[in-house]
Image (cartoon, rainbow, N blue to C red; front, side, top):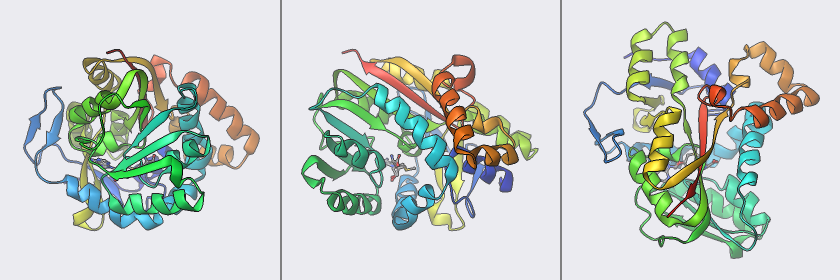
Length: 317
Ligand SMILES: C[S@@+](CC[C@H](N)C(=O)[O-])C[C@H]1O[C@@H](n2cnc3c(N)ncnc32)[C@H](O)[C@@H]1O
């Protein structure tokens, strides 16, 4: 199987998926194992690969925040553009927010500090343990409930119980059944609440083309399937990368009317590494490019070109 190396790691760095990016690569992966289709028509792998994603995140958890925080792209671009989208849809206080697949609590801590009541869920106990330490250190424990839940079956969460629902940073791409995940996110949202989901984008196929792996590009473009590959096989897990219509249709078929589709990031991802570095080393240049991202990355002509997609919908039922 073809492996994507340094070029793709460069893209991961640029797009914030793997700021450390040193040992992990992405492989095409759809053709190797049988795929089934859920009700929404999306392919996922039936084998127990989910535990590999969980194992990977348990293993990564202690170093996870430090890696992302050390990435200038992640801190100065990806996180700022993400927050710019979330803040547009914040409900008035007091309100309950679900941070599903919330990992080490990056968004939970920020939102709880603003006075919201947070429920943080994740499949990885390791990630949740890190989150709990942070929440307690900041004196926010009274405002945060932490639960180990699979995003595909959030059995401990009642229907219609959140005023805003987040699934940031790819849990829907990693969970192996995106249709079930979106159904669950829609179920627990109150009528009229916003649901914000960010996923990997199928524009990652560019990385395969840049490696002259045209079979890999074709397979990813056709199926949406790829996989994170770690040096340790036990941590290799499948990922579903979306097109804009695919994720939008999944929202709409679950009664979530799409109100904004954002590419993250659309301009930085097009730039040669040396230009990106020049921008990231200059505060004013970074501020101006990020402002362009926030203003124009939701243009339908740009949104699908980002390494990540962020779709926001409003529950209509
Ligand atoms: C890249 S991290 C993002 C964490 C956090 N949302 C953020 O933005 O910082 C992806 C998270 O998805 C979680 N995840 C993967 N599969 C999941 C599943 N089936 N159910 C819940 N969480 C899952 C992982 O454990 C991990 O914490």
